[in-house]
Length: 300
Image (cartoon, rainbow, N blue to C red; front, side, top):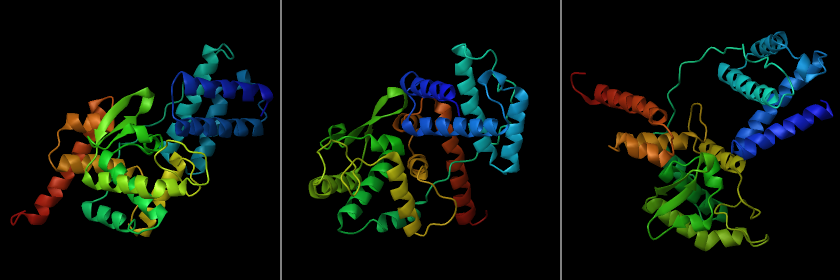
């Protein structure tokens, strides 16, 4: 790829980081999607940005479909590239956005997957132990389940964000929005034990910092590091099916609603800007009620 393209991509990434305030994880996705497209474009012999046409875009989409890529993944790539070319038009680098005419068929929204309470017990069981990392992992899992925060939000938590007296935590959400989320006695106990007994032990060989969760070297845990830990715990618990760490957030919301919490409260706790984002969980709770009814009513 040309030096000029790299400069434009770097400027776009800065725009996403500063003006759009996107997370590092989201920005990495944009960067990867754009670079993959331009590797393909170079293979086709198209040298200049303003030479890319709708026909090139269709060729690229054909390549993605030939790879049998998931429609959701293709839709994400189109969105990333459409945004990049829109930025180039805005900056007067090119005249037209070749992705303007691309329409991606929308998939029916899938219901969020979640863990049942028995599955959560299995997850917590694999965290039991006396080693520093086991104590840290239990605190991490307890906090995520207690608050429903995103993995990226969890990585950003500092010691000063936790109020043990009130049992609330200040979460730094998307778009620089902040919210206070309470946590229960199990998370309270696990956090206090981790901070008082093991955090300093893990950090003994590095310069002190205030981030709550640290890795085995004592440096702050990244979102990727937290995902790795959760994936490993899920694997050790031998839970079946398609599982991903974000399910803890879905589980938090689903269990609250199943136990009588109101929608607005759950929306606020999750940090959703719109109630419609939270309402998808009502479909899960209705399905849960239906299955419970069919399983237990004598004339179902």
